[in-house]
Length: 262
Image 1 (tube, rainbow, N blue to C red):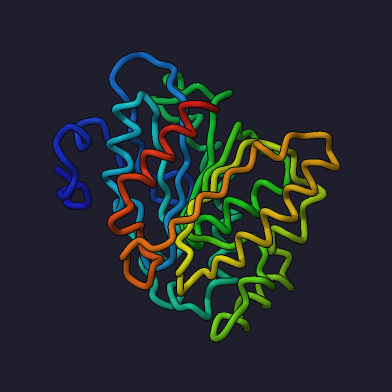
Image 2: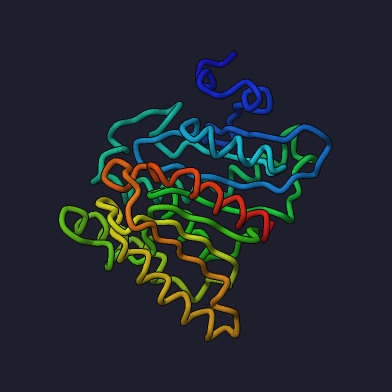
């Protein structure tokens, strides 16, 4: 048994494979059977790793949805604390964006590729992983739907207090999703957030959704494809790291959303 999966329940561990997709260490969870299965691509947040969210992966597995989770640059199997620092956020976002498509392309060459329904892909992420997700969706992509948690899509609205400098640097590098909506093709999007999030202020996703709704209307798309669910309070550390006592509800909302759109 790989030590990195030691905390996984056996039923999940038996369906999980660790692999490397290009430069990115990856974790692939596939349901039993020939498939093909829809695939949810998941990007964790800063200072976390791909193995952190076993409860999420187990729920998806039981629902017949495969999961591909990637270690962000400087995290997990290639730990580099310099890339985990708050000030390194622009570098982290830029590096992770560059790895995402090559990782998916590398997965197509793996033995499990025929068991994946490549026309039924979803992308998602938490915090920094959510920022990467939203920016990736501003360019042509293969995803049917997307889901983000505790993140920001409008970096100016999110740039309060100590976060101001790094968010504005990220914006200047072309990483702010709200500045690239001309390339966003309307698709179903779920965002989960705590109203009291101290790391990613609610304003950073609310302002983004407001701009995105206008974009959908301009494209003749239904703004109802956009779902922003805000928990008044969760009890999570700094109202950011997971959803605390609302975690089960958050996972259920994600599963319901993916079941509807994948």
